[in-house]
Length: 513
Image (cartoon, rainbow, N blue to C red; front, side, top):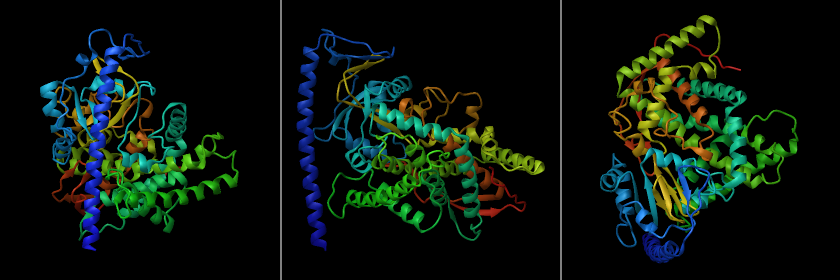
């Protein structure tokens, strides 16, 4: 067995070296093409956006002089090793900070095998996010594109992407779904918290993941608790582990195991889709995302496309939403004054609704202003989504910065959210800063922006609000020391263990309809 493992290790090393050589050759070819394009081009055309200029031919002055400052780093490797080293530290933005001091908030680099423009500028990043989908297209690591499926909303562009995004976005904003999310979130939170014991630690990250995943899958395909839910969750955890793995599909590798898990999920979900198709409830109100996509009636929305996107939409239930809940508990535990004010606000709501003998609704949870400020500050400081990568489909200029065709652009949200020019004491958890601050500014983009703005952003806030409400009104707790890991995904090192103590006075929040 040791010999086999050693052979696999040597084979993987050889493949990585071969990949590095191929990347180097591509870089030389692309650089040569770029220089030829810069010399031969003679015309310029402008897009409809005032801040973005698409350049088919730069002027006689060399456009290379308009490239942002920066360095490509080492041959073959570029600056990837330095980027990853910083990413694993407690200050991942230090890679950006060093270069921002030397080159400015927009600079060039070479990471993950490609020349790239990195933006830590709020205005430039907002322009990229809101640009026409024909100018910038998604760009993800090979392991992500392998796993997501060719019909994934994360990968497709154009009218089909806008259509799917619009259908899902409209459903996420509907009162029907908000009521369903509220009912299910209250139910699963109460079921989970009723089992918590005072003589052992409660791992908030695990509890939040289990709750959020079940709530989301119910909204996606109307699947309830049971063996099928457990099967789907186990397969999904294997699937998501491969998103940031090495692009090696040898049997036994993480990517191979993740692809096999994806096949099992596709088979399972397509069985549910086919059952929904055969039920022929065309005139009924859709109760989940699968039925919304099926109800569109377009031949483009095939079973493969629907299953691909159902799987993609499960990611917030395993990753972003539960981590938002977990980080909020982490930051509140470290800030007693914020925890006290949030608890008082939620206790006041509970007493008011009990006096009226009314159930808590989604509007009640979202009306808690300080709770919303806590969630907003958690999104800013926690940076669950550190940024997005796009690829330029043509030469483009944004606010004086030239981006060549084929180059990747990394808009790094974390540096913007922690920029001392934009936020006073940016590393301090301060939910009071949002009492007068606008969350719609270009300096706050935790959910992305433009045509690819996360359609479920309001639902993420709702779920976090419900979780926090039931936690602070039913328990006091003491948190163990824990630290945040930022790469390749944000999570707690020890899964956020807390020791709880039930409050003497307990309430029973009824489900809303």
